[in-house]
Length: 508
Image (cartoon, rainbow, N blue to C red; front, side, top):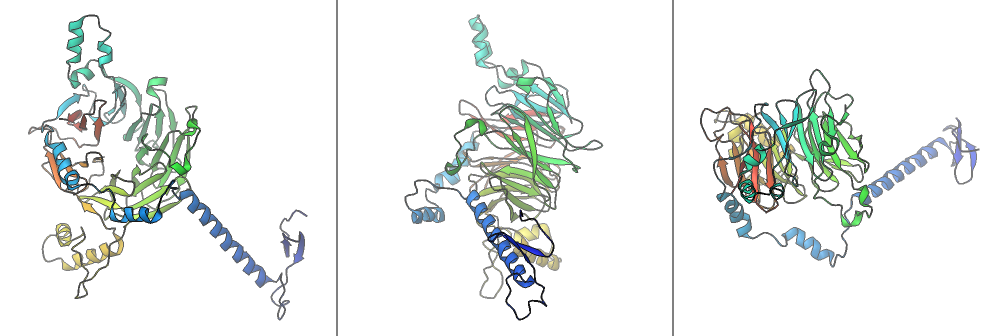
């Protein structure tokens, strides 16, 4: 026999035979091996053993291997005390000095040329080609006139004039090219420079939301691969794995072709992962089927870890190596954006109700230290008395403030820093983090604030710079959905944003 199931009999793997299962009444007073009670105990032991084996295998997959570690004691000590920590000059003065020379007035980069308001944009760092969403669903491209093209001119004066052009004139030399359209409003937009792929997702309305993946430079306009997730009413966000992330030394792969593009997409309450093969085709899989809340923010923390921000304020981590996920942080309100800080263990979370916090994944919970009187000590927390007074102004609402205080210590996570931010109820405002300069740029809700962009110190939380909306009164105020730090090849850093329906840069 091959060990298949036969009712009333038990197949012993060691002996290779079937034995009749004795009932409880037949085995009363006898210690029979194949009685009903003994078989239940054996199945329970096997279940516990399989769970322990699976847990051990998962831990081995998620473990980071540190090679050539001279001393584990020294390694743990460096992590706890902050070995090679930044100096006071770097943490306090360096970010402010970087923003001191930035012009208050934005420098125009390119306009939409009456094709509609620019909703999202991204740029190829090599060719400097701009890809943008004009209006609700038109995807356009605009090339950049570089100095290499000036070398082809025979007239020296023409070459000199071409090199003297500003950024707006260099982008204005070529017209906008339409490379695609979507069936509904675009919800996220990003360019992947490693393979030249363009990822677009839509919110969905009378037509279902889609994920559109294309290679505009290789295949040409209006050629793309589209995916329509099942049982999905809306797609709010997506995030491509940055090309700067590399696998850990313990999991390195010698075959370069296996390192493909990865795109995480929040399909309503589920998380999808799109993988690009070396041949150029895309494949999708559902890695988290149901998170009990809409996925509004996604961010890659390292080569294999994705941070997922939900509408209910929960932040989950997903490990692509083992396929495991866990709830690690809880934001007080709905999360709109997640950004990686200066390390994979630190994450910036932007949410509604004017919340912009920096979290550390290693200390997710509030401490419960009490004073001598037995009351909870909130002096070391960012959920202090002033925070609750801002949420509940006045002195007559003591019960509500007391309830929120108790709820904060029971459910909310402890932020390391809080930043000045004005965003009451808009989930589309963008946040950009520059870990090299130690700066956080956050777009503000201009209906409740007189500032358009606030730039804060990443390491201290102090406000560094503020930019007025569009520089003049009476201008049409469009929300800033895209904020990006651009690092040019000559080392010049600038902050690009959608500005009054166009694209503008704050540069030195």
